[in-house]
Image (tube, rainbow, N blue to C red):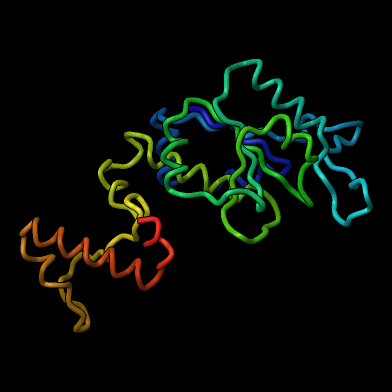
Length: 226
């Protein structure tokens, strides 16, 4: 899989995508992540990538030309199944979306910055828009890193135990059950006896019941979908 990320501030992406599961997946050759500096396609001697918005609204807007030219150059090298724009006013990322995108071959993730991006890019170039929640951050770099992590960890071989992702929250529409590790007792706090029983059937029944109860308590709106 190849993920090309376009950013006006690419330094924000270096560390999150160079370590842990994503970093190891890159080293294994499971995914090729390329970060592109939009300023390499900037306009004029100062390589400008943003300008004032028509209509007089406050804030700078990423220009259409640098984004268009960079994406065109990438598309000339390979086919992309998705060109994704990270935007607060878009459908919110879900586990189902991450599952779907993990099956793609090549995708582009476009990071907005400042006030946003020229709408013409969203209308004519972007194939999909994704938000990480109903709030605004300074740019699309952190959301892009989150999306990339959510995708990469699902690629076969990225996790040491590939079945681990199957029990994550939201995979079956519910939150996951609580998890414990050694010691079985600490400071008087004990691990539930059923988890020490060695009985897979009882353990699974307990996990299912816990997942249902946690979802009811913490995210009751998910039960409607479930």
